[in-house]
Structure formats: C-alpha cells, structure tokens
Image 1 (cartoon, rainbow, N blue to C red):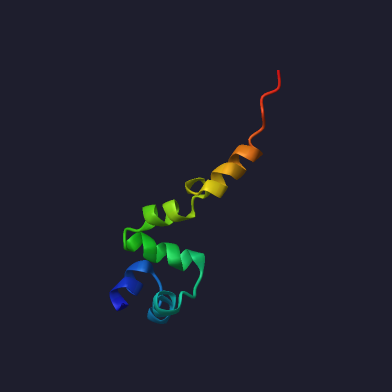
Image 2: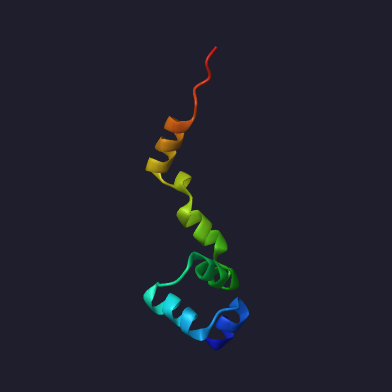
Length: 67
C-alpha cells in the first residue's frame, strides 16, 4: 500500500480509504487506476456508448440531416 501511495503521489491513508471504502476524489482514483494499468477498463466502463440506453440517447441527440 505504501509503495502504491508513493508512486501515485498520494498519502497512505488516502489510498487506503480509496481502496477499502471507495471514498476519495476522481483524481486520486485515476492516479491509482493508471498505476494498476486499469485506465482502459475505467474508460470502457464509463463510456455511455457501451450500453443500449447510451446508444439510443446518442441517436436521439444526433441532429438529422435536413435537405
């Protein structure tokens, strides 16, 4: 835990709170995710186009071409 905190530029209590209780800032979360080589998984999990509802909403928001 101490090594992860050091490499992320965070304190040990901050990393502990983030990993054990899921509490902390988005910046701290992303720093830890980057070190654990999980940024691609985070991006995939939060991409609205990866869900049926997200794709439907994207289609609704796309302006239709008017001729």
